[in-house]
Image (tube, rainbow, N blue to C red; front, side):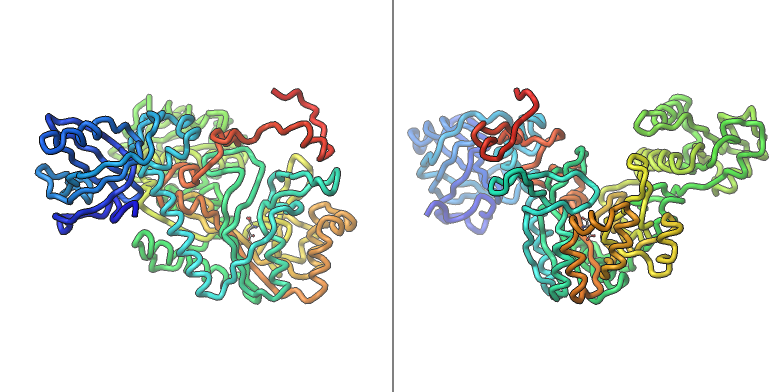
Length: 585
Ligand code: ASP
């Protein structure tokens, strides 16, 4: 037996017991004639004590233990004279009688402690060591807990976990595919699934009724903090349900997760906000509603004087930052610089300070009277001491800029507390969105999403007006998941493909199997998928989903530990009938 207990288990009640422990040496310190070693495993840290006066040889052996040596000790649990109340085992130590080195270790490239001295790159290169750190492992334990809660809930509700293939054809979720060459079919390629979308719909045609899968998906996109080329979805689908039923089913799932994992009970139903409202008041389809500061449109009130910037704008709107009238010149300049950053793209920022005594001071005092500014302040519900921040220009672009400014102000004012959770559903998305690049409409969610029955009439004449039975769950400004009621009728699906500029032949060649399946009794169905990584990251208060993935990729899509991607042998390429055009390094 390698061990009788773990390194996190022993307490005062064990004093006097002989135990065997095994683990890694976290720290080794000499104190007079004594040597103290912190022994670590997944469960905690236990102090080992060696006394020169009792056993010189054993003490010498202990002093030679380096960091990360794997050791086994036999000893007796004793009460510690100087207790450490920072760790659960801090009242005891092991008076060691026998020490065995199970494996030596080289000096690790960074300290394996919560506050490590290792930078990102080195930790990723030695991720297996990084994963020994408590803070990282805790995220993966939380991930496991979340998967467990999800499976538990879904299986109780009759969902069947079903695996779907990974070597498939393109599933259009709006990203680029990763492709895999087929040796047995020269010149042909598989695509890795961007999601199991079509398979889960086919399972509904098969009568599975309720499907789920915790599944890897692959999207070749530029990476950001909340994106990885391979990520995990909680993918679900149901038959014979309407939107309302789906929302309730998965709202309850999220509530259960919060109840069981965070001890948070959401008593009220989640807010349901139409997409149009989210855009109008937050400039985003994933509004962070932990705080207000909603947009107020003052186009009419602003276009009354000789101020060309506002007069030429399609849209003038602002937010009211409570208590910020005291902002200094420097702070205001800082905000102007913020909105002018290339990635935000505003041309400038107009401010109005609502000062004590009902007067106003603004960057446009030259053009507007006190009365004018007062009318804006009133419309924006501002009080004395508040600061109005106003942007103008093309409506859609300005909404996006104002959204960034609102989030920035929320951050500065401490209104985006990671321990506060504000979920909502965003509903009634448009079915289609105009794509400048290709000069045609593309599906806002994906091409299998059903239009609202009352809007179908516009699908050929005014496609931009058609709303979809699509929904997203949004949490703290992050899209946690999304889905839709699906088209389950071949004719409607063809119409949708036509709308997206796909000819009948193209549709048949790409999605013939789905159109065929719809000929054999497809039930009405609907579903959604949650991003598991994002969910964990939100629960853990992490800034990046990387921190809750055991072996993530870096921002260039590389796994620096295993050095992937990498070049392959010439023979391998030949077998695949592939020639590389680029000079490889
Ligand atoms: N397949 C969709 C996605 O990956 C989710 C869904 O519609 O169920 O976003």
